[in-house]
Each structure stands twice: as structure tokens, then as C-alpha cells.
Amino acid sequence: MQFSAPLALKSGARLADYRLAYETYGKLNERRDNAVLVCHALNASHHVAGLDEQGRLGWWDNLVGPGKPLDTDRFFVIGVNNPGSCFGSTGPMDLNPATGRAWGADFPVQTVEDWVDAQVRLIDALGIERLAAVVGGSLGGMQALAWTLRHPQRLRHCIAVATAPNLSAQNIAFNEVARRAIVTDPDFHGGHFYEHGVVPKRGLRVARMIGHITYLAGDAMESKFGRELRAAELAYSTQDIEFQIESYLRHQGDKFSEYFDANTYLLITRALDYFDPAREHGGDLSRAFAVARDNRFLLVSFSTDWRFSPARSREIVKALVDNRIGVSYAEIDAPHGHDAFLLDDPRYHGVMRAYFSRIANEGL
View 1 (cartoon, rainbow, N blue to C red):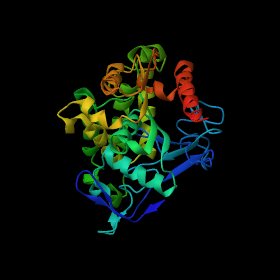
View 2: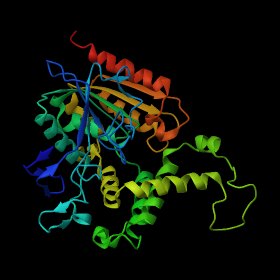
View 3: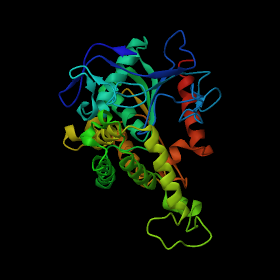
View 4: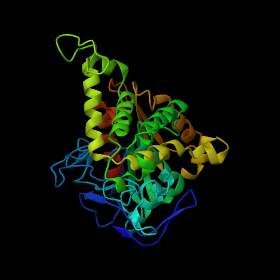
């Protein structure tokens, strides 16, 4: 969908004449009150469920669809791709109308709050006054939280999974190392690599490898790979792949470098870094959530998620309880680390199914 009115960004810049890619699943009911917005995480898109034209399965297909926890026989589900992404919405690969060349590194820096404001415009264009819920995991969970802080009157429920009220210093450090890998790649060309007909694949590979290490729990990595060798004998080489975990990380890096945009990676990780709703309230998260008193919340965390640990979700729960806001909290004992929010855990999906059923039954 194309938007001609400029979008004012938190940085002070404005994004004019931009488009948002989105998909919908299910049907909007007559009361127009059964819509659920799904917010994507770092490397995902608006393609949430089912198969697209290229036969690719939606990134949350195990959760969204007919008869699934987010049941599209009951809900009208909207998947949206944020500005700055590389999956159909206006981003760094598009032409900058001011210069006639690709935006590249000149694409305006985005924040979680900017994305939410863009999403509100999409919801307006779809004729939806109030969403039944906004849901997301990881960075998507931050967006769901931001909806309650910026536009609390536009949704009833917030479902935030495997997320945090801000990034820890360690998380910011991981993001910075990944960004350095990209910008120091000789093919990056200051972010204007499109004009040179190259892609900074080496940097993207390393960035993705770093990310994958943080998404997995140590025990899960040990169980899956251990010290298993790739070949029967050691090669005694500093360059060759010796261990299966090395092979896995290189495979993930190679795959990522073929489809993801380097400038998008920089933009999205910066948005992660910047998210900190308590900052404007003297560091007081409870004061930040005071505006969300008419919303209801579900927070879900996973025991082995060390990147967005359960303690971070409990900070949000405490802030909501301090404001006497209705909140349900589930801490799932799962071995998969941060990636658990994307996987088929029956306890996790049971919590999600029960909560969405509760939403669907409201007012019946």
C-alpha cells in the first residue's frame, strides 16, 4: 500500500511517498473488531503464514492459520513489513526521489516507534478503528509493547513474546560487532554498494553467524552438535571446516547473505538498540506504562533464552502490576533459547491458543 503523506520520524527526518507491504489471513467480521496485527522480528517479513508465490512458508506458520493458536477462522490477521526492510516496503534499495539513486546508507534511521506509527496508518487505511490484539516476538514484541505506549486506544490486547523493555549492554555489543562486520567489508562502499554491482556478503555472513550463536541456548547447541567432526579425521587446518557447528554457522551465513540487505540489517539492529520506553520517564518503566491502563497483556518468556531472558519479561510484568493493569505471564521451560518463540512447543502454543480464545470470546 502506498502512502503519500510524509511520515515524521523520531530522528526529526521525514519519510515521504513510501509503501508498506502486507498480507492478510482470514476475514474481517461485520463489527470489524477481530483484527490481529502481527509484527515481525529482525529478518522476517509480512509473509506470516501459508505459502507465498515462490513456495516459501510463512515464518510463523506453526502459530497462524485455520485451527491454529492464532486461528484465522476466528481472526483477521494482518502481517506487515516495516519501512527500511528489504521485503517489499520502502527501504534502502529503493530510489531516493531527492537524488534519483538508491537510498543506500542515506535511508533515514528508523525506530520501533516509527514503525508503529507507520502501522497505524495501514490500520486506518484498512478501516479498522481498534485492533483485537497486536502480537510479536523478540523485536516484534517490542513493537507490540510500543503500540500500548503510543496508541493505547487503538488495541485491546498486547501479546509480547521473548522480548524486553530495552537491550542490555551485552545485546548492544553483539549488534555492534555484527554491524562492524558489515561496514568493514570492502564491498560495503559506505552503504552505496548497489551502484558498484556488489553485495557485502562476507560481512553479512559473519553478522548472521554471530546472531545464530545468540539465538541458541548452550545446552541446545551442545545437544545438536557437540564436538562432532565434519569428516572422519581432523584436517589440522586453520581455514577448513573441522566441526559440524562450524558447518552449520557457515551454511546459515551463506544463506542469509543471499537474501538479506546489508543496510536493512544496520537499520533494524539500530532500532533494537534505541528501544527504551523508560528513558523518557527518568528510567521508570512503571511510569512509561501508565498510559496503557485500558489494555490487557500476555507476556511469554523461555527459560533458556539468555538474549531476552525471563527476568526482562518480569520487569515488564512488574511495571504493569504497579499500574494495576491486567497481565498474564507464562515462563516456558524450553531448551531452545531465543528461537523458542518460533518453534512448536505444545506448552507455549497452549498458552497462546488459550489467550486468543479468550480474546475471541469477548463480548459473546
